[in-house]
Structures are given as C-alpha cells and as structure tokens.
Length: 599
Image (tube, rainbow, N blue to C red; front, top):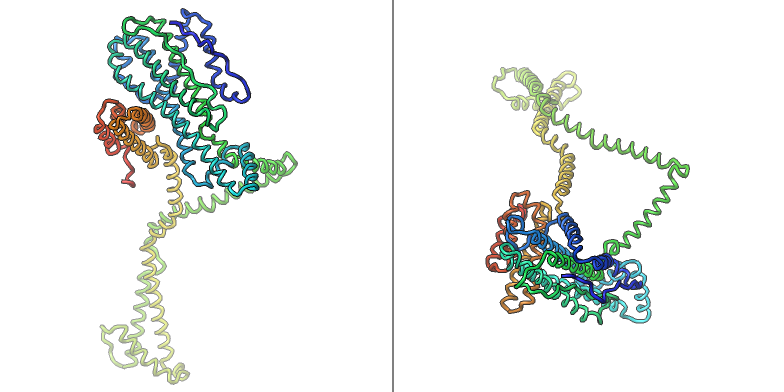
C-alpha cells in the first residue's frame, strides 16, 4: 500500500507576504519529499525509526485524558501485537495534539471575548496601545486624521476594534467546533471498538484506520467550508491562502482480507503525516487569530522600562569607577552600614529585649518599688503619733480599739484652734506637731498608692511583655503567610490553596453545564451541536484531569477521582448518573472541597 505524495504538491511560495505562514510547513514538506524517494519495502525500517522517535517524544509529554479503551489495553493481553501497540501510540498522540490545539484556541477565544465585553474606551486603548508599535503609529495617524476631518473618530475606532475582535472570534469558534466534533467522533468510535481491538485486533485495526481516515476527511471538509465562507470577507490578509489537504488511504476491502505489516506501517505513517499537517495548519491559523503575545500587549511598559533602564545605566556608569568616580563605592559602604545599623536597632536589640523581658518577668516577680512591710511601718508610726497626741490633748486614756480616723479628727480640731494664733502657737503650741502628723499621713497615703500601683504592674508584666513581642510576631506571621502561598502555588489550579480549589471547582461546574447542554441537544435532535458539546466536554474533563492529579495523589484520592472522570467521559452513560458523579466530586473528595473559611 504505497503512499505517494499528491501530484500537485509543490514547495510553498516564498513571497514576503506569506513567509511567516510557510516556515512551520517546511519540515513536513521536506520530510514528505524525502519519503517519496524511498521505496516502500525500505519504508518499513524508516517507519520503525520514525515511530520510535514519536513514541519517545509522546512519553516525554504529559499524559492526557485516558482513551476510552479497556483498562488492560494494550499491554496486559497475550493477543496484543506490536501493530496494536503502535496504533495505540498513534491514538494517544492524536488525542494529545487535538486537546493541546483546543486549549490554545480556547485561551485565545477567552481573551478576545473578555476584550469584546469591555467598554469603548477599553477597546480603543487595545487598538492603539496593545497591538505593537507599528499598530500604534498607524492607528494614531488614522485617529488624528479622522479627528480633523470627522466628528466620529472615536466611534469609528470602536467599530474597527469590534470588527477586529469579532472576526477572530468567529474563526476561532469555527476551528474549535471542527476540532471538538473530530474529537467527539474519534472518542465515540474508540468507545465502540475497544473490545474488538482487544479480542480481534487483526480485523479491527484496518477498520479503525479507515475510520480515522474518514474523520480526517470530514475535518478537511469542515476546514474547506471555513475557507469558502471566510475567504472573501476576512479582514486578516492571507488567512485562508493555504487550504488543508490530507492524504487518503487507498480503497481496500476491510472485511474480506487482512492487511500486511507493510500496509499497516504505511497506514500508520500516513496518519502521522496527516496529524503533522493538521498541527502545522492549526499553528498558522491559530497564530493569525490568537491573542497578542505578552510582549506585544505590554510593549509600552517594556519600552518605558527599557528607556528607564538605559538612563539609569548611563547615570550609573558616570558614577562608577570606570569613569574615575568613587561615588558607587561610597554608596555601597554607606548602605552596608545603614543596613547593619537598621538590623541592630530594629531587629536584634528588640528581640534581645523581648527575650530578657520574658525571662525577667518571672525572675523578679518578688521585687517591687514599694513593699507591704514599709507601708505597715509608716502606718504603725502614724498610729502611735496620733495616740500620743490625743492622750496629751484630752489627758485621757485612749481605748486600744480607737481608729486612726477618730484620732485624726481630734488632731484636726486642735489644729484648727492652733491656727487662730499661728505664730505664737508655732513656737509654744501644738501647731508644729499637728503639721508633722499630717505630713506622716500624706506619706502613708503616697506609699499606699504606690503599693497598689506596683501590684497592678506586677499583675500585667506578662501582658506588657507579650505586647512588646507583637511586632516580631506579626512580622513572622507575614513571612510565614508568604512562604505558605509560595509553597502551595495558590494562584494556579494545580495548587493546594483556596484559589486553586476554586479553579478546580469551577471546572467541575463547567463539566456539569456541558453534560446538561449535551442532553438538551440530544432531546432536541440537534446531533451536530450535541457532538460539538461532547467534544468540549472531553476537553473540560482533560483540563480537570491534569490539574487535579497532583493534589489528588497527595490526598490519596487519585484512583477514585480518575475513575469518576472516566465515567463522565463515557458516551453511553446516563446523564442522571453523570450529574450524580459531578455532585460527588465537589462534595466528597478533599482535593475539590472548599476551604474551611468558605464552607
């Protein structure tokens, strides 16, 4: 079964307008020309080397969503041949490449949809500042020219932006629809033929290869329709100048004869060639309609940064030792000293003070500014002074149970009488003695207040020590939070933090919506739309399969999660059961549960 290149195949044109388009196709073209010069009998050896390289390359990539084939396929059965293993590798490669292309298309489509939903000012900003310097100059000139000649320059710019985005969105959506239908048809066929491939691979392999050939032909037809519809009204120059043409398998009786090893090898190589053509075609088509690269989107920031860096470099060079200046050395020395001083004053010394405070709090609890014994001595002295004064003044024996307040009243009454003749009584009376008693009373009150304050301070020493340690505590807490976020990779769906869990749960919601949409289209008899949605369902399952694998393995739930995802992808499974599985995913498995703060 010789596979000859088409007679009209020729090297792509190298005109300046399509040089960017043909670069990805040259490797495939040259390979096809070399393969056409080698006899078919020797192409088996060449095909084996090619298959070995492709298998090695496929293993080096991340494994995508499992094929709908029996679990023991293709390694655990004695009936499995080398040809079956090779076709299994081809199927894995087709699935991986189609899903990868779908992901690229979906990312660009999400970008254009988000821009199309923005305000008119946001659309105008995109058209002028986010499409590169060439577009900036052209759009600025057009905007200024129309502003001078018309009053609706802003409206015209917004309409141009809407047309720019909608054209790309239409093409990307049609590419996504075609690939999703191709993926759905392939997945359904594999689900139907899985048992036959395992039990009778000699008869099943030719029919499977013929089905794959038919699917490529259908995909070529959908892309040809895309060219026919969009070639005339596309605003993107050269978008549809290279229609996709797949190679065909020769007409062979699939039921009545078995293919030879040479025919199988040529058929597998032809599938590989068609897959390479598909990837090359999509790389050109998606490349023309994809979202701008990060460098293009933020070229204004990068330009300002480059200008600022250049000015800073010139300024730094003028102050460096290369120009005979010692400014930089002096600045480095000053910065070093300032850093060491800051570390000593704001980190080392406060930490040592906190440590000493925490330990000394318990060592010096028995020591205080004022002791109870000292206050008691002052109080006893005051009591004796009051007693003696009252006995001399009243010339009577004072009872032992007389209080200091009662005796103090006697002293104050005599003190008031003595103030009538202060100078005389100061020398000959009891005025000086009354003043000394009041000083002693004031001393007692002060010592009592100091004793109470000392008791309050002692009771709150540990609180003051903890308060002094709060700045270091908050600093450590902030550093631990940053470290936790970095370790959990919380901004990615593969992480273990709250944001990653939200992304994974949203993927489950997307899967549930597509299951219900698929069932709705089936009930309405819209088989083509249902087929498209089923392909997008497989794509969503593949995304969730990738992002949930690592956290599910960490929690020990991967085997059960994997089995549930495979159940969701089975075409013949009941919709009610699939919806039950989606509810189980978000309610049972720890890797998909919300965090405690969100429950």
